[in-house]
Length: 213
Image (cartoon, rainbow, N blue to C red):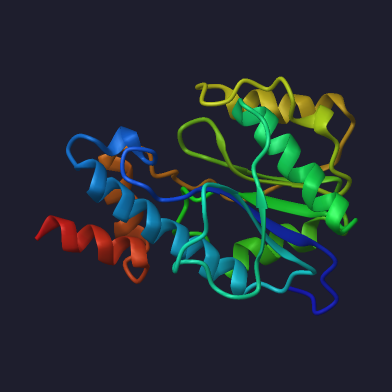
């Protein structure tokens, strides 16, 4: 990543509380085990962001921060009811705090690396948007040089064609979009196994190995 980075990086996440996160992992995992996996994934995501040059690092959090949060992050509350509303609000709040381009990720891709995040941030110097597709048809990253709620609001989330619909929205707005590699979101036990196999040195993979003992 270029040393003169001018993008901020934002994670949108839920506090990893049993019964509130990663409910699609239960079964086979218990709510407590699913929360442990969610916390591990969040730790990996935060670590990747911490290692990436950024003008600001933020966490848009549903819940309260815990010992898993490293130093150097500004915590902002999530606003809105539906996911598209919460994404739009997170972009707007981050941009209001600092009027730089915003790169947003979730807590579902513990395999994310500083190299990928750096590529996204760099791309916003030359493109209007950057987009990382997810294997389930959604997206794992969305970056906007000039965040505008209209680019996100109304896009159906958690839908097989969420990613296509989001890309269509960006295209209709006339934005130049840089595409990143596809990653797998951790939604199911099969996803968890796939991600852990691809990123065996993560907190997430270690947590999954511990549960499989």
